Image 1 (cartoon, rainbow, N blue to C red):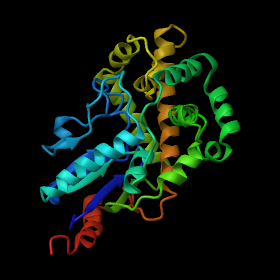
Image 2: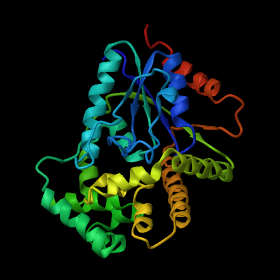
Image 3: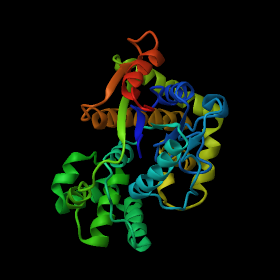
Image 4: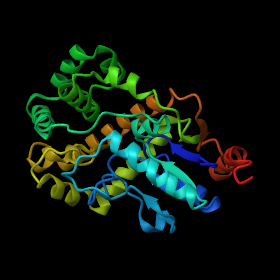
Length: 313
């Protein structure tokens, strides 16, 4: 590819990434590639804050609502799918705009990491998910820590998706995630990527946006959506989503709706902290602070104009 440039819009949940990505796509003849591990699932529109038609403004968004709740989707799947989509966008002389808060997806794609993902046993995964339900997150995290202390030390023990993924890899292949990541970094990068990060200098303002978003989700019908997903009576990845799992105790009569909603807000704020911890390790991100910037779009455009100089020469 003569032109292999991509813009990645990253940052914590509720920071305004979708709106900025749409602005960028409109200005530079682009299409958005979602990098959100929950927006992949059909039907999970409210809990995953899936962009509505009025928000996308006619801009094509890829990798949204492409999987059913009972389908597996891994980092390896994302890297493969995103690569094909971005190549197609570029070949049509358009700009791919990667947008999302799932840092592992984005960085694995940008760094062209290669994961062993074929032939994994559904039985092993189902057993791990069942153990999560019965034994709790701490038990699985402690098991991972005993197997792969280096990787376990890097991740939040409450990030059950990554804990299960690492255990699944080990029990299927005998390789730890630390070993796998070292092997996967042998490939050269295929794309030239500009990272633009969106955040708030005043953390309280970000948390206020998160709380308001959760309230809007409730008014949009989050409770009914969660009830539908949980009625499927399985423990697939989608049912571990924030906004779904916190309502389960409410449906079981264990807590009030108000307590469940507060738990959703609390977990979303914690998730935002984890996202920021992840992205703050990336020194190449051009951060824009929405509470200190008069026009976020114009600031982003200035970075992109410089990045794209000579793109079509």
